[in-house]
Image (tube, rainbow over all chains, first blue to last red; front, top):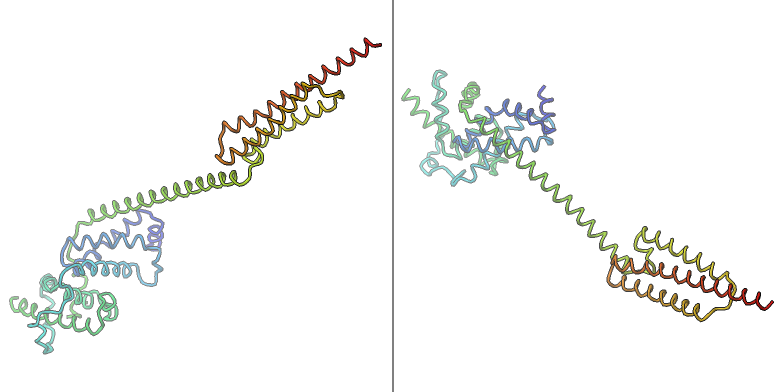
Amino acid sequence: MQQLLIEKCKRGDTQAQHELYKQYVHAMYNVAYRICGNRYDAEDVLQESFLKAFTKLSSFKGEASFGSWLKRIVVNQSITAMRSRKGFLSPLTPAIESNTKEEADTWIDEDFPMEKVIQAIESLPDGARTVFTLKAIEEYKFSEISEMLGLSETNCKVQYHRSKKLLNEKLKVLVAEN
Amino acid sequence: MEDYLKRNKAYLDTQQGDYGSVWNQILQKKQRAAKRRRLYIQWAAASVILFFAIGMLVRHEWVMQQQLTSLSQINKELARRELQYQKQVSQKWEQYTLIQSPTSPMEALLIDELKRLDTLYQKGLGDLKEAGFNERAVVILLDTYEKRLRIIEQLIYEKQKQVNYESKTKKIDI
């Protein structure tokens, strides 16, 4: 069924493209939002991503699912949008870097409100949020993340662990309040 | 942390954007892109046509410049008309040469006139070669054939007159 829809989209059928858009827009918007951190950038990214997807649809051979293929486009567009921001992927503050001691992840109860966890993730600095989102939420491998961000794998791992540390500290406060 | 997020992945997509507005903007951009593509194709097609038209004109003029010994080399229509004239001239001239009688002074004058027309024709052709295709010049050149026909008809008339005069003179003698 979806294959038929994709074939129609390849032929430029606007109605079919709209159907495909409706199927994936919510999930892709949230992917973009988690990386960009705000509605306006996320909507811009969404627009550009779908336009690109419809243009490049002939190159989609079906090796991965359409959703994965589309998500990759959205992630790349989001990172492009983020690169224009000052300080994106710059090292975290010295105060945080100096604390090199490995700590266990903050224990989160299943009853703990999800929106608070999301809030904590969204409050991370741009670079930290991006790396954390790509690894922990979108479940990309470090090799893929390093390719997307143009960083070495080691650098990505360091950024990820630092972002986790920062998140842990924020969550500690929230859990204590709860 | 990762496990927690994996278990609760379904609850992560909490944000809601203005999806309708985003789709409208996508449509507008697609329409603009299609319009740009159409314009580009139109411009490209017009350029190709113009290029060929100029090329054909340049080639035509170049051919004209290179070798022009008769009007028939300009185009098929002129070739047809010139051939028709040449046939008529040839037929009339044969008609004239078949009439046996000495050449009168008038005939000599008319034959000179024919030679002048030949010279005029060649000169006109040379001018065409230099200055390029000119409809008025072509009309003038074709007109030389008309004049040739009139002169040869005049020659035939003079010859006939001479023949008639001679036969009258013979009858009187008898």
